[in-house]
Length: 360
Ligand SMILES: [Zn+2]
Image (cartoon, rainbow, N blue to C red; front, side):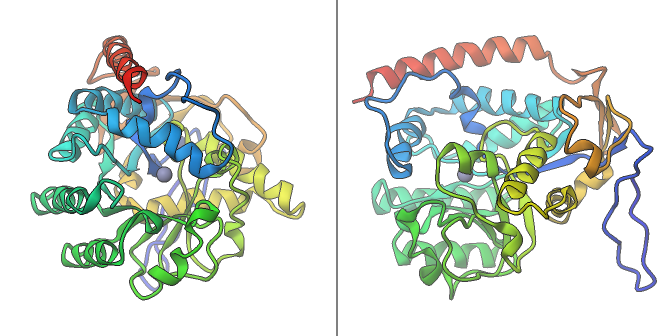
């Protein structure tokens, strides 16, 4: 795959070479590395019956139980799994209300150790009072001020005051970056369009936009598997004027997998849809994280084109080079011990589950 130069001098969008086994590094445009240890977690106190209850009974309990050590092993496991999936760049959205300060450094260091690029943010919210929101803003500010690659995170408009939304937008502008925010994922956040209309900019990451009632500036990040899992409805990203990228919303970082789900979900809604559209959403990831174009992934399959990949499951990354350094060889990481990370992550998960069992 190459990035030819057009006569105007701007880089053309890279196109897959149907005869090649290699691509640039894949980009996961919306991840929650903290959810890597959540698999197998204790069942919630009762069965959630709608999206807001899924947040309240599952994710908002989990994020309260996170400490810096759990965050570290969760991020290492998530980064390892990304690398094993040919994903070299992760745009992460993090929340840990009882371990805010320094959390973004822990995630950035964990990814660096494994050899995966990461763009961090802390998801600000007023769910834990205005002091919690201030601490979240301070963590974004501290991390970006120290030179970290990131955005300013906001959980979602419906858990933030107008003052917090304005502060986050202002902080992002000060740091010349965008806001990374969940927008109208469920019907609880229907007011997001009106509340964000005067704040949003082209460099914002607008996550989900399932029930967004108007167009906002920014890149829409579509997470089809997560949207189906939460029964929030289909976002119909192809109908939006925005650039669209693909994320996993924390369900791993296997972007070929997410591409297949994105294609078939679109096809279910529109039988004239082709895999080219979902593939273009993967390509938008390289606009958000152009460094991944310097990376090379060698795959177990020699037809890395949208029409073949849409119907070919189980394609594996065998070798990955990030900025010229081989970080995955024959499916094994070169910088870290995969077995050790999995063992330590399992220990951290056991501690996390014990904390969840004790939580009211
Ligand atoms: Zn998310």
